Amino acid sequence: MSLKLRGHHLLCVHGFRGMGYSPEFVKKMSEIVGQVRDDQIDFPIQVAAELDDTCCTCPHKGKNTCEAGVGSNEHVLTMDHNVIRQLDLIEGAIYNKSYLVQITAEKVEPDDLDYLCKGCSWLSYGVCKEGIADLREKYVKK
Image (cartoon, rainbow, N blue to C red; front, side, top):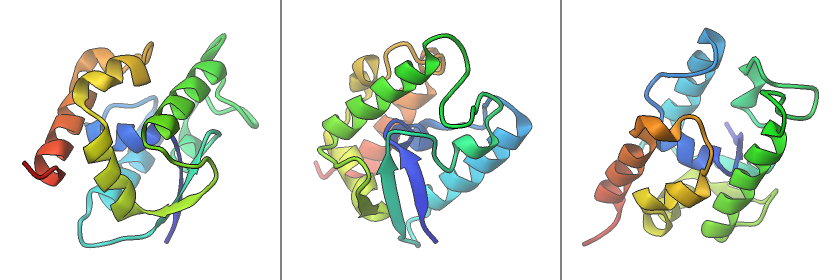
């Protein structure tokens, strides 16, 4: 098993609580989130700044870009690049899931999402910051 995830989806998987753009999207995202949160399995993840494995069921998916609205593709690309930079990753490179989870816990604090995910419609729900806080609680040694 392997996955391709956008930079910003590396954060979304920790805050996801079953909300989404469509029932199909929620189902697919739930599957991916379950795999990423399962400590018993490890697998390769390609880090991308383009449509990924979660986008395949999104109703806003265009041929090669996000088409949720005017400027939406540029917005998600900005979030992807912000996260890739914050985690010091290489776009297109493949990393073990366990490594990505660990460095996310170490390098992202809940309030970082105000910048990393600026303008995201999901940010106001608070679940993303909760997810990152929970991740840090679990993985960052005090």
